[in-house]
Image (cartoon, rainbow, N blue to C red; front, side, top):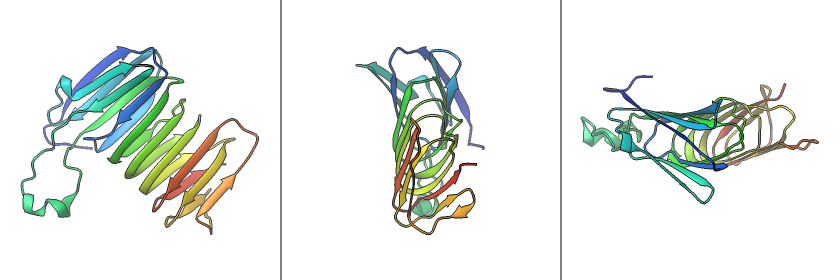
Length: 201
């Protein structure tokens, strides 16, 4: 992945809260993974990632993470609407302590969760979600995009009005899928146009 004049900024700090809320505004891509300590580490890659572009605030049991990134000007503004909405050319890698609940919200963004051992909620407009092995509860709501996940011993409920659902490379005939088992873990996806690909074996 390459960006014009790409630079890097890092912010590391310890937290005591159990809930982390992350705004994806300004980002094209975001990767989240667990850290081996009680520290949060945020690495921002962008054309000009000043320290103040990583904005964090901890209050009343909740850590808020935001990215204050200015949109880069297009060389041909007249064609901008035909190119892409993603002109920020910025992405972030966030490492969080195991067991903290994470909530994402935003518009258009791709998110990769590297087998996070944390409850995960994602509320976005569209994007590609690569969740790898899901190890805790997950709630996902998006309008359109693609969801990839590997589930093991997990209660599952999937609804996509116009998309497709594929379980272990076999396409479901309905626009919903439900699998209730004796498990404490839950995986739920609600969408209009997203395609969902799950691996359970």
